[in-house]
Image (cartoon, rainbow over all chains, first blue to last red; front, side):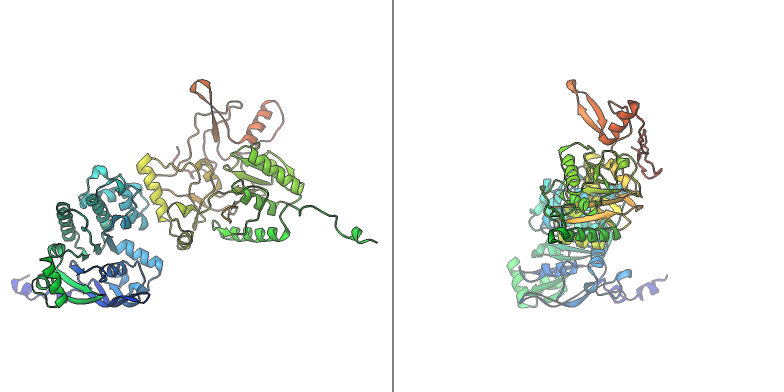
Length: 269
Length: 313
């Protein structure tokens, strides 16, 4: 291929289809409107940060994307061969579970939500493969070890229950569980909040490396602008269930346009 | 002619204790259970003069089924003479006038807790098992409503997580009893607390097995000649408890499920857990002509269906 042909390739983002398309997502809890017309497109291998204050609807977006709760209205599509053109909200509960197991990984802020605290750590990771139908014990062991190793968890402790582990290690177990099936989409709900700064830095390093190696698309929810700045390519600012601003991370954080974003960035500085 | 001559003689109780409506309901639920192997059918568990947990579920099924020509055997932990078994047997006999026996071959209706007899059951026999916890998913899903959803989805994967945890912790599966089994390729059921040793006996069995939980108000069935497979990993096959090297102290029988009897000085002696078989063997040794049926396991603990137990222990 000549140099000329290479330079004439269309820019990547023009050619690529977004991995995830969410259009006009709304969610009511009783009379409370938690999300109002949220739309987002995320491209393969991209990291989207969602920032906003508590109650702005960040975590609600993630719960809906993880198909944990029914939506009020809106569509959700993933660019994955067997799900093409399918609005994921319309799947039945069994198909939703299959999609969740095979294509979506999630890390919660609170490890109690994501892990079985009294089962072994390796069992927690293996659970994903078991749910996907793996019936060979040796294969489960191998996959659990591989995932835990990838998330830099000390392998010697792989059979200890998470309840005996430190907060940072619990997050690593959650991460290993989330990537066990090599999903296309990884959802992170405040993954490092509650960890001390040095451990936080190590976990962020691991995340960054994994994102690079597995070419995962990530959606990262955080109120910590430092974490967003480290990981996210693009950022979306939410307030009161609406998206108030979105754009490239550097652009939004250096030159915020919306009054609320300005406030947020300055509060952080 | 007087009215008293036309009317039936006054009776204190209906035949087989339960009223006709109760028996009819039970029979209909039993038919439904047979039609959907392994599926738990809810039923209206009646009061019987026995505490919940003492076999009231099994008793109600037995009472609904027992006819005047039946011969009833009741066992508890393999033993015909334990308190629970003796009580139930006497109650059924008093309420129906049927014959009772301790001989597995002579019985047409066998109610049991914790064991399936060692001798092969045939097409004419019905085995009723008493079940304390019918919901096999309760250990992984505390909500019964959710568990029923999982049954309807055939969503049993998490049971393998239990096996995984056992293998990691103990290097073997530690379920001593109530080992989960897949019935007819569809429903996973709790086979009541029979030991792992008895679990394979349900596979392609000639007899009808009915399982009933009185307190939990559920009954389910394994019809004759139905596939019943214990859950297992492909590379870690299901195993029965190893009984090799143990012999019954009085008859020398081997390869059957044994009860361990601690001896003075720290040793153990063993006796057949199936006391009906033990008595027959003893009478045979005393020179009596007595028919002893074929057994599920031979003296070397080989199962009668060759190749069914892959993990020869």
